[in-house]
Structures are given as structure tokens and as C-alpha cells.
Length: 94
Image (cartoon, rainbow, N blue to C red; front, side):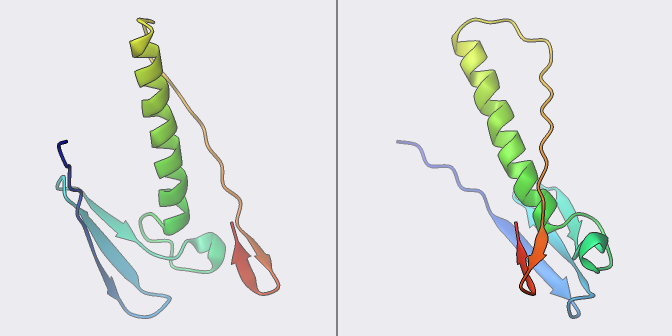
């Protein structure tokens, strides 16, 4: 069995109002912070968007692989995903 390794390194400056940088093994860098919707600075992306993006991407790749295995020709797939974060008893609930 072949193993694949994916390394993510993160750094953060400041408190909750600060911001950070995520460095992905493929060479991409993502600025991150608490989103404006949750009273943060809204710099770059945020954990909520990254979680939804991960699920969205996994679904698209799985669907594309299934269609490919069935020899179904695909020109383009588009998937829209939505996550809702609410404050419940002073805690965030996804």
C-alpha cells in the first residue's frame, strides 16, 4: 500500500482579533482569521469556510470518480454548500 502525506503548518499572531497563515504541503498559503460574521477581523478565510470547503470538495471528487467509473462523460460539475453557525447558550454551534 502506498502512503500519501499531507502536511499543514499554521502560525497565528495576536489574540482572537489577530490573524494567521496556513501553509499547505502543495505550496499554497491561506490567510485566516475569525470571520466578520462572528465579530472577527475577517482577514482571508476562516475555519467555518474551510470545513464547508473540505466537505464540498470531497463530494465533488467522489461524484466525479463515480461518473468516471461508469464511463459517463462530464463537462462540468458545480456544487454549492452552506453551513450555519449559531450562538446557543453563549457557545457556537455549527
